[in-house]
Length: 497
Image (tube, rainbow, N blue to C red; front, side):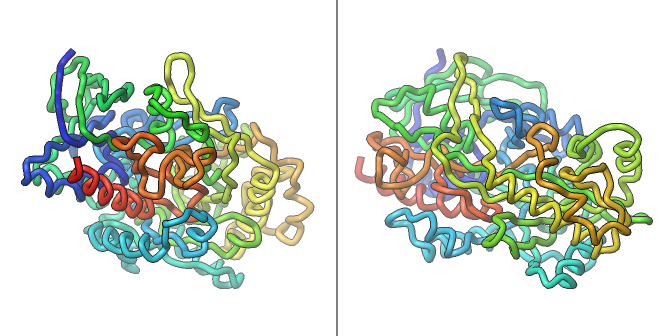
């Protein structure tokens, strides 16, 4: 086993790990040794081919089809230098004051999160996309929401010189998206941080990370040779994501009791709704996610976003088979899409655990209120689609595959709750949160308000698993803001050692 030693080891290089690495990197000039251990590879620019199945298998865990234990829902999260920021659409929102208030974590103030969020909004070049990059798929949604008097806003996004390829979820082929792979990690490396890719951390014990470096045959080779490693560290920051961080801590058998570990997992259960227009619209050209509607957050507990997904992903999200299914997928150029995100409660029974081999397992039950929210969203989206001029709408909870525009006055009869069946509809998500939630109560939280694991002063968490409840928005910037807090505490703690 190969021995390595550092002052600080950061596990994961996504929004949390990348932010921590960049914030701590000035310490390298003072002789502090810092390493980032990333399970995935660092991709070459030529690796981003835009081929859906090829890139899904390269970038995502389980090809983007990681399933809950009961196989009712799929999760999409990435494994790469830059983590899921590589496949993220770049939408960058500051968490609402009301959400932080609902979180109710003593010592966590919205003003502090806002201040730190603003730093990353500037650092990542977040801005509103120019008018000429807004395609029909987005404009139709915006106009329809306005006509229906639904609140609708434009997403600020973290791009630079966007070419409108529409490939955000498969890795930007034009180096436009300003994820941690473009901003924070290069800055950290410039200051002296070592980023070790293709490095899976198997467990942490007594300030030692046991890791395996491999050669997957894609991207750049790791800076370390393949083999088994024993990496000593004064301090460890786990930022492997809301699925992999709890799983890692379970495998590590930490010297403290953490009854809430893995629990209170939330994920914004989602599905893609699709409508068809009578003529082609611009949908793939341009940024895929330019608007969101939070009109129903308080009353119906769901959020709507524009989206445009690729043929395989679209096909698997349609309920049913046969000629109607084929008819819709064969005319991708006429499709309009909306992504629905249900705001799910943080329940202790929804959790991340591990199997006998130590692999993560997510146990998640879709509650009736969450299913009710998803059902209500279908009818709302149908109204938006028809207000946008769609010819027909595919409703997963519909009595038939299509609802025609001539039938739009009968939505309550054609879209019914009993047709929304788990297993029939394709439910997925990419906003994975909780499992190492912050708080003071050791029975219901895993870390303190600064991300330190209860009872383990040298171990911190810095990713979305810290969230005590769902974010109620896209969580990217909030992850970075909380990671910024963690970095501040790690720095002060290191100085006292």
